[in-house]
Amino acid sequence: MRAVCISLFLALLCNFVFSQADMKDITYSDGQYTGYSQSDYSAEPYWGIIRFNVKEGKIKNVNFMIRDSALHETFNAEYAKHFAGNEEYIQQTRNDWNGVNRYPKILERKQDISKVDVITGATWSHNIFKDSFIAALKKK
Image 1 (tube, one colour):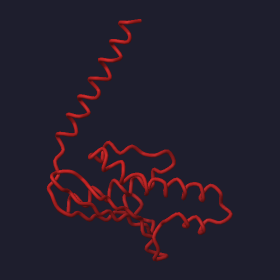
Image 2 (cartoon, helix red, strand yellow):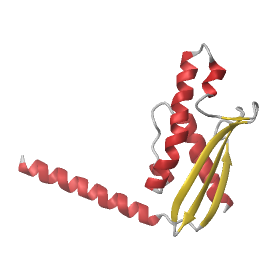
Image 3 (cartoon, helix red, strand yellow):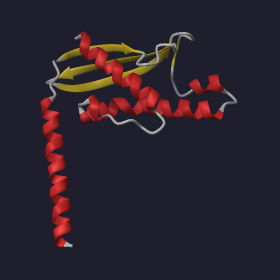
Image 4 (cartoon, rainbow, N blue to C red):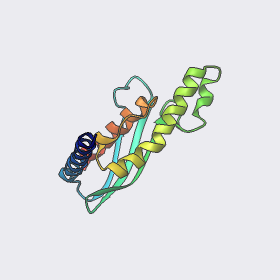
């Protein structure tokens, strides 16, 4: 039993050390970034817009929204009204709204877009968030 505990401890320690080493490999140039993307959803009228700052190589103040260019409004908590009577779409809207709110905070904490995992049910907003971030880096 003791050998199992020691092995588990060493595995967790190695995982922590390597994850910290991965974060040190990523460097960002200081400045303000803005990116736009539809990800793979170019047939849809939705655009992700991300704005963030990098100070001393660290991502800060991440703001993210999704705009509906057909309805000229921002995807938000009330957006489900457009799917009245369709519970599946209403739930999907709620899940993606959760992603829109959480992905920026996760990115600030992880400092690496590849470590921002998909939230269950919020793949659409994740893809748009990720591609908007990548677009912002390319513009700088």
